[in-house]
Length: 331
Image (cartoon, rainbow, N blue to C red; front, side, top):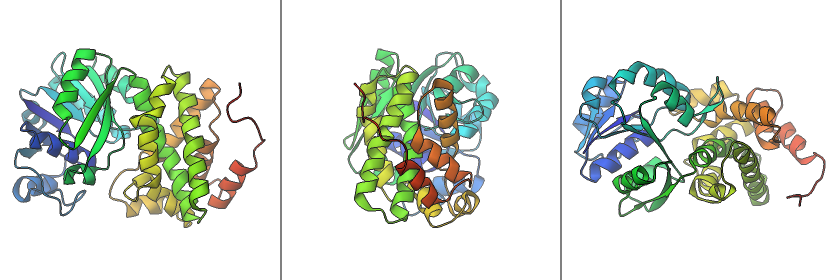
């Protein structure tokens, strides 16, 4: 089986390596010639995963036509805000019925659309699945145990893809709730920024636990308004990914929050980071979606205001804590 992976960041590289370890022929499409050379000659991605060895069955490729040749499925691991343009440019390379497994977590800021909608608009002849859940790329490459969920509306395709990704240390569940899996993966990044701010201000474990819990309530409210199932947000792509991203030091979005708490602006933080933190764009998209649907998102609103420089970190916390008191879950 031949597989093409679009995007050579940390997560795209980790998934490409995972599939290569399983014996598949994997082409990792990259834009950077130096990174491609390092992957092919040194078996490393020094920019995103320095010091980590990659499997010999993984081949980096700069030529998209070559990468797509005889591909059985495509893994989309590009930053959410860049995905549409790349898919549009490569649309002729996607054969009818080719499965696209999205590994990007976010909401397109300009349209407020989920990746399933973006892919459907740009590649109407393909079949779609989304891979999400608590999974740091470095730990996947090291072979540490973990579990994710594959959202796919087609049961037989879900079973086939589930088996393709699953390994001794990588357990893969499936779910027919595609929107729920996507929403959990996208919105947890926004809450993780808030958790980083809280930790950076030294507020401790109580505050972090409260943010995770109330953040999950926000994710569930907005997700349900879009047709997702509440139970999905109790699973790996909801609670699981939320806990990991809010507490793990490898979390890019948590690092953004720590930077904001230290008084840095988004431009300064972005300059220091090698990778994209999707929560920075997703915050604004989530708030806009909430306003459209009449869904209250106080944590996301506070994060957006902080990212835009409208309030300081301390002021954002004050706004959250001084809202009107109410029932946790009205009966």
